[in-house]
Length: 257
Image 1 (cartoon, rainbow, N blue to C red):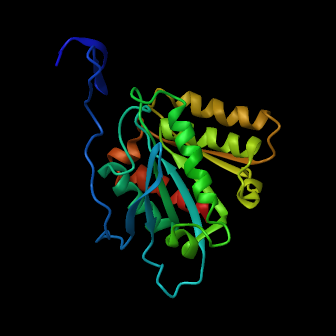
Image 2: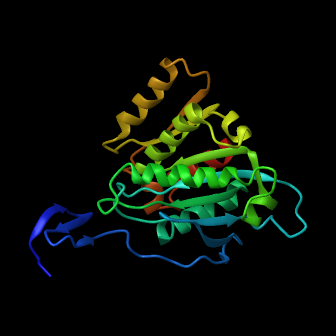
Image 3: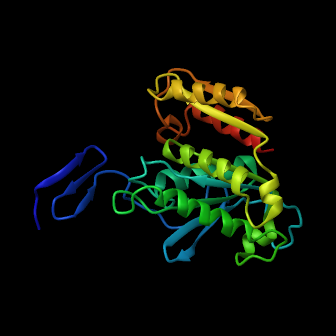
């Protein structure tokens, strides 16, 4: 085993000349569970074996075996520069427990393959495959009973942070151009967009530029921008109970409802 570096992407990862990859962040995981604070239940499943694509599903406390009301469905794409983190990390598990509880939605958190072992467009292709799997539940006949029973596939939302937001955008574009086999999900198109930025994030201007570009593109939807004052990149994940993070979660919840 060689310690000679081929690429040093610190503080995210290091790639050694023998092909070994050392991730410096975002490697910890937590099991699916019933969250004691929110009552949100989660479980893990495999969407595809070749390539391996997994997901973590969440349902709020309001769902019961006798429930007849269908809830909005959130498809979430985690961040991490396409290189680190997962749908099973404590950061995203904690965040989605809180969001699913407050918004009263069902969520699918997609675990796509990571670079550099799986360079782009692997993350996009895995996410698209996950969306087709979600679409297979329209009409209540898909392979996952939680989605059949509780999810309203006429009200589907995409969300993500950092590179996950990039994935969400690209999935929205792809649905608009290619559709899914399920026509209803494709017909949702994208009628509204919420862009969340942080004042001290170096990527803030790109978020504002994105919103302005949407308005000028001929797209007929409505876009809103929420800017959190005095905050940095993905602050809502690192400090989820801060005033700005709570306000952002409340805004996203109302957006989906």
